[in-house]
Image 1 (spheres, rainbow, N blue to C red):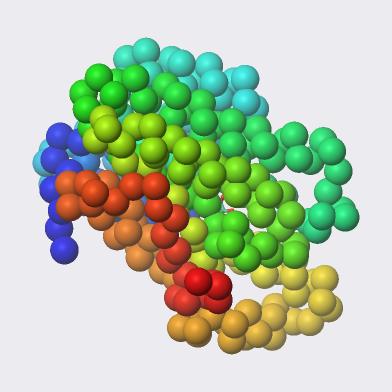
Image 2: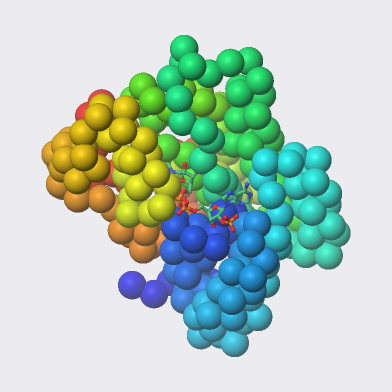
Amino acid sequence: MQRSLKNKKALVGASSNGLGKAIAWQLAGNGATVTLLARNEATLAQLAGALPTPENQQHQYIAADFSDIDAFKSKMDHYFSGNTVDVLVNNTSGPAPGTALEKKDADYVTAFNLLFRTVQYTTEKALPNMIARGSGRIINLTSRSVKEPIEALALSNTIRAAVVTWGKTLATQVAKDNITVNNILTGNFETDRILELYEREAAAKNIPLEEYKKQALETIPMKRLGKPEEMGHLVAFLASEQAAYITGTSIAIDGGLIRSV
Ligand SMILES: NC(=O)c1ccc[n+]([C@@H]2O[C@H](COP(=O)([O-])OP(=O)(O)OC[C@H]3O[C@@H](n4cnc5c(N)ncnc54)[C@H](OP(=O)(O)O)[C@@H]3O)[C@@H](O)[C@H]2O)c1
């Protein structure tokens, strides 16, 4: 289903690959002008030139590193000094895996900068213009782990939960300005990130990767990984006018993986 995002400007984080790329693709296909954000400039330039352009949009990119918070903030200052955003997709790279016993004080600071401060700062820069215009979409990509923590992902469980409660808090405040803020609880999707996690878990359990994958898929009621484009469709819907009354929610897209209600 096509939704018109004509004349909408979208900024999508971690978007040269995986989920972010699929989201950028859907938003562009629905008419939005997309600004991509990731580290590798050559990949970004190539993708910005390849995204769909049904409205003759001119897609752009920002080469920035989420793991250097001060440099990242400078890049955002520079970008927002000359640009506005209608649809902000807060997606970052994932934190290092590891259990609660393995992770130390400094790891939590690093993960907080990566997962929370980059998102909060980008939103802080995007919001004044959204409030002035009386419209906007903020979509935070988190993880199903905020509902059911994953033992091997202590940093993700902890800091993404903060993103969700921050998003909910903000949603209440900006609803009167017709700005929606929603959190997505991501299940397991076919991307490089999930492959890395599966490889790590298979090694930790000392079983072949294929065997681990089989076991992992068995835990998903739909018995398959999500397709990145399925995430793209959800975000395109939340970005659209049709989703104007949906705010402050946390929406799971996980093939039924979360068991709690
Ligand atoms: N896939 C899943 O099943 C799943 C499940 C739950 C949550 N998530 C989370 O969803 C997010 C996206 O995951 P994904 O599966 O799409 O990963 P992915 O396929 O590995 O893509 C990661 C993207 O982030 C960019 N990136 C990596 N490190 C970066 C950095 N330091 N600064 C800026 N950009 C960086 C990469 O491009 P460059 O290398 O060029 O920078 C790439 O565009 C992650 O936070 C992940 O933990 C994923």
